[in-house]
Amino acid sequence: MKIRAILMAGAMTASALGFASGAQATDSKEVQMLHWWTSGGEAAALNVLKQYLAKEGYTWKDVPVAGGGGEAAMTTLKAMVAAGNPPTASQILGYFALDYAEAGKLADITPLAEKGGWAKVIPTALQKFTTTNGKWDAIPINIHSVNWIWVNKAVMDKIGGKDPQNFDELIALLDKAKAGGVIPLALGGQPWQEATMFDSVVMSTGGPDFYKKAFIDLDESALNSDTMKKSFDNLAKLKAYVDPNFAGRDWNLATAMVIKGDALLQVMGDWAKGEFKAANKEPGKDYLCYRFPGTDGTVIYNTDMFALFDVSADRKQAQLALAEATMNPEVQSAFNVIKGSVPARIDVPDTAFDACGKKGIADVKAANEKGTFVGSMAQNYAQPPAVAGAYHDVVTKFFHGEIKTSDEAVKELAAALEGAK
Ligand code: GAL
Image (cartoon, rainbow, N blue to C red; front, side, top):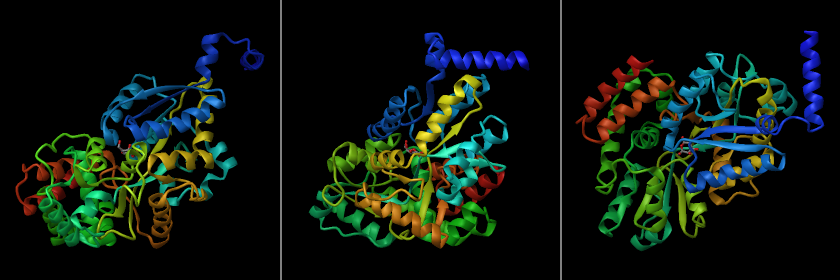
């Protein structure tokens, strides 16, 4: 014990005086972050954090794993952790963090959280994912929500469309686009994108109580109900409006179709707004943001968190610096203005945000108060990964015609969710 204390004191003095070797100094000041932020808007937002930490004297090592929704990133993370080589932190969604926490793989940064009073400024719903047994082990950089549509304004004007108030009006608007010779719906036909869109369709078809019963409670009667069948019917209707090349397309390429005016609209989480911003497009002038028709007043959220791994002692200082930077209100404002999301801290003012961002912030506040702030099933905030994965599978099989009818889809979904839970 005595020897260890002496060695530690020696090491501290050496590093304080700048005597540590170059390699060691770099390592202990390095933040290694695994993430899937590889699109233009995503990378631009991450730069805010990188630059802040650079000013504080930290270096940044990216572990980027392309693939929207983070499926591939989660596979890489699993391998790194299994090899005993975890990153300082990893972008992570909801229940994935709980798995690592339960396996004892995460750090405990409770003292920093208490010093910063985070429990008072982070919505309670999110704290289920940032803490385990009362200990903080993950930090939220933002709140995204999936129930949005992003509309090209020039195309909207050209076809004489107006803000759709419900699902039927959305279909009428998509018909107008079709008649006007433009691709109505820009979609990337990947399982996570289709499932993310279905979250909104279910909310629009059944409302927040139904959504909660089906996806949060996995209530059998809700899952087997006519409302769920109608949700699949509605999803099937949307298929008539995608272009023939939709299968496999990345989400940001679908956003680009709307930005360019090749398509009228995209149903996507507000990370799409980050792409409009990166292309210097302005809301109200170049594009319009509406809640997915029929879901106004509800927020289907997914938060990007950084899971903090239980790294060796020499890497902890950099980890705490990352945590502090992430929770800094100014960083949260600057990051989210670019990312398209809203701050995870509810005390960050909306001053720097554009009209869609201001609406996003107000919506989160209102939904939080009304009890209509609910986790995204597709994005791992309603159920653990195995259940969310089963959901992706059934939705995509239905959308691509492998499951032929809504009746069959309802049965398959109920059975798959039951089997995975
Ligand atoms: C989501 C993530 C967003 C966004 C999107 C597309 O899962 O929460 O930050 O990056 O994937 O990559």
